[in-house]
Image (cartoon, rainbow, N blue to C red; front, top):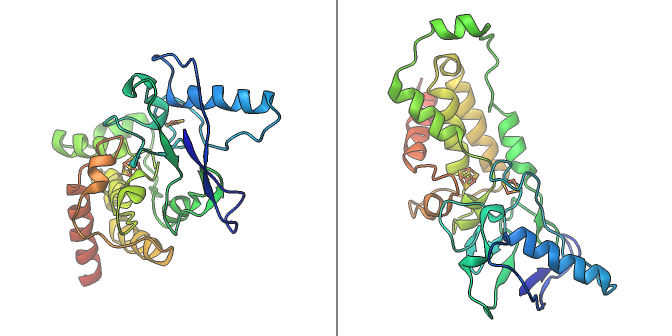
Length: 242
Ligand code: SF4
Ligand code: FES
């Protein structure tokens, strides 16, 4: 393993080489890192810091850049869903943190993704009273919009789209939120306000612009579609002109 080690955001980092032995093919990538850390602790060495929580592809905490790809060599999975059978015995695996100005390194492989929370605070919610279950069932939602909103809602805020993008753009993430909320009747009302505020915040936090390379879509573990970015751009333009 060649793993990025860095004390804090200000210090200079470097790759450190570790050897991990006796790993089962059925081990997840994070379990393999656990085994490495247990060995390092037993040997009185500092363990490797990495983020994780649910370990089932839901929370978005486990972002790692593995062999040059966000979340590693498998498609449509998070790092915690990646298994060691995707690698060959004797492989050298390179592990780095997300690299983006808006995601400063906290330690080793852990980055601060609170910039995403700040964007959500600007409008990633519905503040109108949507009533109880009965009222919700009386508001008809077309099947097409319901499917599109549900697909966009699967974004887990992992940040792989930012890490994959040469501009460190957060547009796939932000556009997923705009679609998820704005395609539903309850969320449509605040769309103009939401899109203007969230896009402005994204820009001030140092994320880059989209130049249509779509690496974000390729590396997104939830396969969020790039058409969400086009929808966001249309809504942004309408909001600015009205
Ligand atoms: S759009 Fe995909 S890659 Fe980006 S934060 Fe959401 S789930 Fe992660
Ligand atoms: S640890 Fe939650 S998505 Fe991987």
